[in-house]
Figure 1: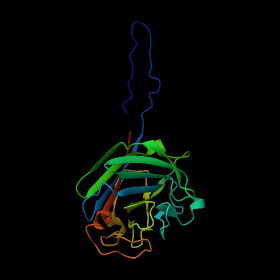
Figure 2: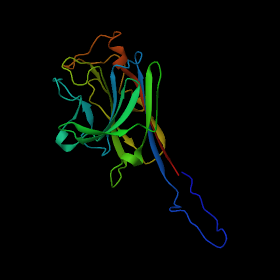
Figure 3: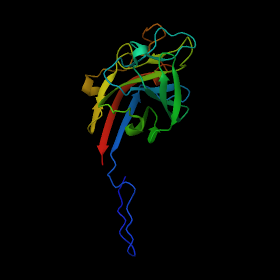
Figure 4: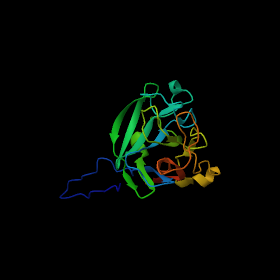
Length: 219
């Protein structure tokens, strides 16, 4: 935002309510898939704003009615927010209670888009940052066809979906799959029992083949 100074007019001085330059802190997530986006599937960006704790990961084995998201110890946290891309819409959620998987909508991301085999979204970190603000966050990308069903397929970061990346949000940079030694590779979509599935037209739209996370800090 641009701070505007109002000059004195007719002997009367006026000042802006706040002339302090505003800091802009955004983060952009981009996920590339091993098949075309399926708008009936659910694509999630799981975020823990308190980085370095338990980290978000998909839930295995799947149980009917149970959530798709957990952590090493849900009671200690591991996820505070998530973005859902479903049926062409992006929605940001704040998790109220991870153990009971209670959450509320915060609206839409600042920007979002999707193409044939990718989707991306940009969040305003200052709008969701805890107080005091953190310097790093944990992120996992988790895709699933049916989030609360027994028979569902899931892909997350790493060979069993439970890896997550810790991202420094204090400076501008782009962090990518290559920076981790390609922690995520195509062909590792899992069933409810963590068994790898053979690539197919049904499976490939869930399969993460590449990703990037870009932070931007500016005044």
